[in-house]
Image (cartoon, rainbow, N blue to C red):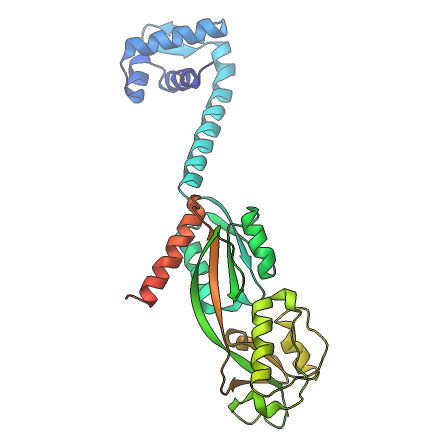
Length: 300
């Protein structure tokens, strides 16, 4: 049975008149009458009683009408939803974040703007280490990822650097240097350095350790924090000192103070990455938004 037969049948049932139904459908009356007759022959029973001034449904027609109307509504809804998804107006967007990346104001602003522009697309967040995010992207378990550089990207990944920010030194309140706005790492001598495991963010981990030694600060070993953000809590608990991206200074933990780092400064970058040759409309819309944002930040 063709779906158009149901449309013709419902139109005639609602108009109770072949001519008016034909006008509503944008067709002439004779072809509509022929299509209804073919439909009745296919079903094997009359659906309408032909009257002098119009038609009325038979008992069989009445039994079919409500189901036919619901089938058409479901079909129209499914088609509209499919077209919306194809345009990136509905559906979901699987977004990956490396630890701390979601705290960066640029990432938050992009996600907020995306949700405003595409309110029927649901972002589904997932936090992983950079290496796991890249794998998840390649295996299509996520659609786009925000992470900290440096990290190793494969040839099948595209991306854009969104922002750069300095690292901040975090000291326990009451530390001998906590009164200073800027502190050189060389002033820290043998302070215990709280850092996350290397596999959490290898590039940032190695950069921190390398800069510490180049600055003449040879940190004493201390317990690892499970993630970058946990280092702040461990400083508050008195385990040592740590370095975190400036955007994490928004975490107002008790018993810690944040300080600028003297020369040499350490900077970290936030990037968005996605698969090359991506065509999914929901993802492409996010990529366009990212590039539009960057063009306003760097018009040249």
